[in-house]
Image (cartoon, rainbow, N blue to C red; front, top):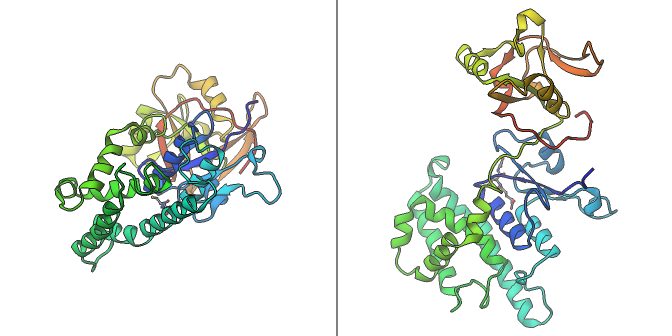
Length: 345
Ligand SMILES: N[C@@H](CCC(=O)N[C@@H](CS)C(=O)NCC(=O)O)C(=O)O
């Protein structure tokens, strides 16, 4: 069996996750090769993420035991974006983005990097949120926050050296860490940002990233889609696409398995995370458009019983009643995933 990979819980548009992916890419680490990417929905965080990192914000990197997670005293979880960046660049930092060398010059640059990130994650993010997501902050003056954020941007713009980087004459962690947030500020009003006076160096800095390959790479296909992965805490049901569409119209799903209804069978067939591939192979491989429903057992109204399949005796989860649509966390075209080691949530 292939060695377990570090798992990155990520969300495509999250600026914190983008900075983490930028650092992983800068370190030469790729999804599917060096790490497993698990794109999550923030409104339905998977139990594995909550278990690994309590608060459940993304990004989070979870290391397998053989990558250091099993070493006594070594931290198994990198619970936020800066920790993921530090982990990635500690492995490989060919451009010396961290300025890790000895001497006063490098130490001074490290201090400037830390100060920029602190200003970004503190006051700049505060004003950015209240400008960009004004409806979430009733009673706040959106334009005042825009002005305060712009003041910080002007200060950063003035710091850009002749090479066009925030610290010293070459890229550093500060460029990667601030980039997604400056990009977000521009996205709230692209024309306003591009027309803004007194910001030319920073506008050029951002444009270089927007037109270059690094940012595009971490937003692109390889890093972007939900990977086919399964939570051991959820149940899975394969549904014919037409029958799922009918259920949405009816407000409830009452099919049991291919060609049979809940009424005929008495329960809805489901699979555990490690069983769904085989179920697909046995019953659905030639069924046309098949959807994978991820089900939160905690939102079911009917009881779930693990019962033996008549032919093999293997235990499967059976839902003894209708499937409420609210219990279905995700619906996606079925795609074969890597086999999971058998274990229960
Ligand atoms: N300090 C954290 C912040 C991460 C963060 O706030 N991520 C947001 C998405 S951009 C999140 O996961 N929000 C979900 C939530 O708060 O429930 C970091 O650097 O990673």
